[in-house]
Length: 350
Image (cartoon, rainbow, N blue to C red; front, side, top):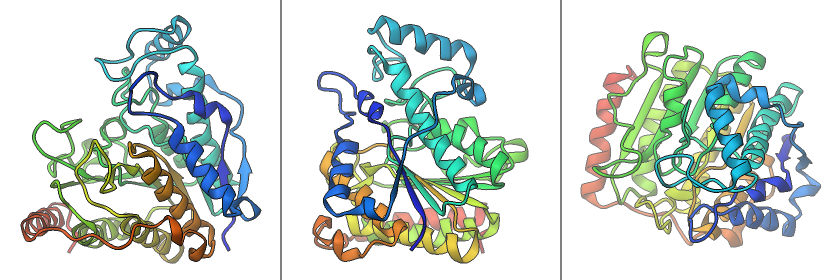
């Protein structure tokens, strides 16, 4: 049994965009309910985030942008980006609390926990001076910077259906962090970045690994890419801690993304990271949330993954699983194989 912390504050639930906006905090509350019903919190410790530290935002964001979000939060209307991240009363405070959850998760690992889970985190699109893709502050990049100070070399494994463009941009020249993102990629799909030739710059050159996947990628092709790119990249980098961004929108039922992961596919990914962490690293993992617009599917994915990290009996969450692993078409599998071959050559993965 691994010592696992579940970082939570009810203020997370205020980070939920109004009207028919697809980003709702219902996902987090549903996941917590699933966990409570199955007795998780007899095993997993619920920990509140540390008190707000506004200065921590400028680890990666410009002071001018932080001031802008604070002012828009007080105003309670308008846009924080070009159109899909609206301001509302209290958005600054709730976004900051989600950042503190991820930072607290890192601090708990430094204090002796094996794993920490912050489902309020994973807001990987936010840029240095702009919101983007429903993300106000980039807690992923901030958590990485904290982890570098406290724990050493950090590997980010991002399995959200969208490319983690903000995290990539903020850490593109960082020599102490490996940034791996598996995501759907095709013309016109948000955010339009994440091709195989984006590999980092300066001291960070070679430490950004993008795995662009075609629509229709099922569990078989996804796991093929994971085993042949992500695991060798982790072995080569030798991280001291792994940060997982587990957006639920790679799930086959997500309305905004066209990948075909099942809950069982997600679990296989988490199992592989978990095994690598304990066998070839320090065992330290921070798991964050992220996207996910089929709220029930996302909540089920997060609950199942938390059970795996916490050592909870898999039968406790069996009823939350999809029936079976999914398959890709021959065309999709061939495209994924081509991407994998190119990436192994580019990054010297054998």
